[in-house]
Image (cartoon, helix red, strand yellow):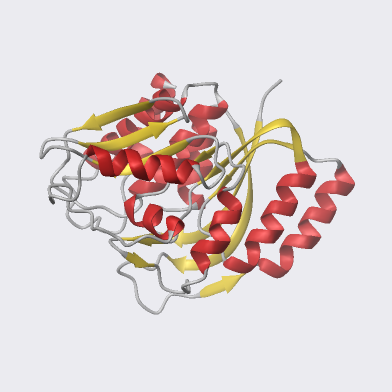
Length: 279
């Protein structure tokens, strides 16, 4: 039986992020992908100005009611950018539309570089913890990990004296204590020529690193998380899924490097053939 995944996150109509990334990538993994938009933006918020924003919280209950009437169920859930008010509704949707053994994959999108994204208040991380509790996989970056744990953010300078493997292991263990079954921590590195992720299943920690490219690009987190979600639905292990996600990010960035005018995202579309070959 083919699997059906529901992804719940925003639509940025232009900008190669969120749902416009998740739908094609997870579909390319061979997974039927249903969507529940949390909001609609004309563009993403990084680098564009004057963008439009429309919240869709009020539509969620009626959508759920229709799904229940039609007997629609899901084998996996993958959440991204959502609002605080939507989290109780998302938990309800998961509870009432899940097939037995359905995966819950949470990308706790809310912060980077030590700061919460615009629109999120100081209480948002505590609400996000509720979504992480019981999740099969959570995928925070270093900033989001600190906010989830209500800890001081040490910075993402991976060569700082406070940033070592002991610190990362401690983060993983404390994140697991939030109630998630598995953790993928992104943005991890212990050397100048490596950047990647750490995976923890409660028993052992696995790492996957690539040599970092000399570029900063928008949307790479969505490419990573979407690839991981698709790979997990295909039965890949936690580390294999994370490794594929990291490789997909690198392939997408490589396809974008030569186009200096393409500042707003990565050309992940160029890497989709690579993904279908390696999934």
